[in-house]
Image 1 (cartoon, helix red, strand yellow):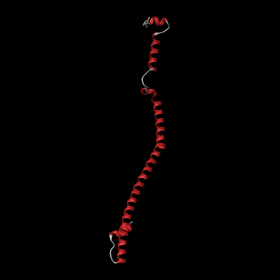
Image 2 (cartoon, rainbow, N blue to C red):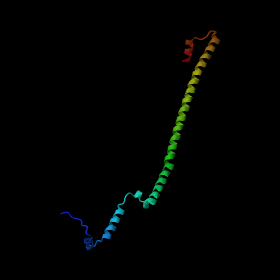
Image 3 (cartoon, one colour):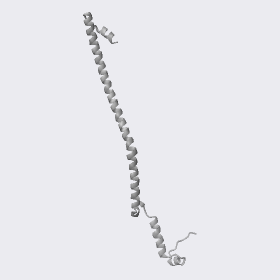
Image 4 (tube, rainbow, N blue to C red):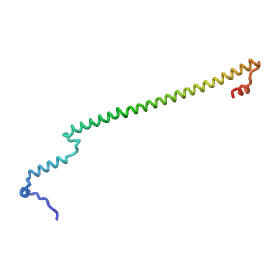
Length: 131
């Protein structure tokens, strides 16, 4: 036994409901269920205010916490790279200097041997001096 809705305004009037009241109720129901709040111009000032509050909170967080840490990390990385490049340069310069020292030492030893003995030193003698 399904209930049937009737469309008789006279019967509604007899039960205490008026046709105008039904329209008012339907209009109120339509407004309360109405669409998305972001498209309701009446709610825009509040939405804009909250947007600005949240925006500036996030902006302050990024400005005072994220950016300094990022900057410190970048500076530390640059310093390490510069240090590594400087150690590599120092290492290359040291190796070049040591090569020159060995060469100068060999030439000096050869000159000393030649001055003292009157004959040039052999490469076997010079190799023995290096080790």
